[in-house]
Image (tube, rainbow, N blue to C red; front, top):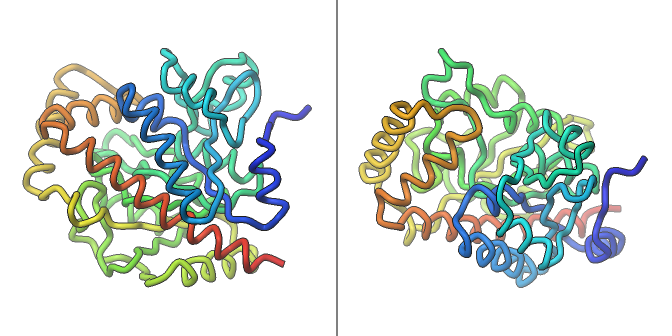
Length: 304
């Protein structure tokens, strides 16, 4: 039985060796409020088109993994309530129940690989949560990066997480971490985290070459392509750090756990920063989409 539906535009782009960039749907359903979620989703798709590639937003709808949503389908994701947040463990259930599912980083990587899409742009990846050594709260994004052959362009690990432990865990899994035009790994809202980047690349072509070499050698899994937030949207560490600490305390006080943690924290941080965090979030997603489109073009041009 066929559980994937690829849009005509994405199929044609793949067949004609055009760059294609996967986009997640959790950022629409859980990452931003309406109508910013709808506006941002459409604007990010436009950024990818302007940079010579084709966007492929991924979600679960009507019992299928849909790769390449229409404008109406994106609007449905933006407006719908009680959308299931879908990682690897949730895919089969969500499809079998014909529920509406928004794919996380891990879920989107799976859909992208099923469709033959090699590059994915997102905001930030999941990781090891603070106090993760006690709670074992570790995102499925990390293990998926060791399984699916998809390069993930992001602004680093979400700053609400434990960046150091996340980088250590990715090293254990053998996932390459390459930072664009910087020797320091970014921290989502901040361009610097205090952690030295494992690898550095100064062009989309360098990144494309590394990814193709990896996969041609049959070294399974993806890579983290860390793209620092544009400096004009960089939020000072002391400001975002205090906002995160305050939001985490409120989260703990209210007993919020599991998949509800990230959307709650992002909402509280937006409130604490007077909306600056949302502006920065939108800016970094577009910045990542721009880089991803250029990497996708390079990969498509080099394929046999």
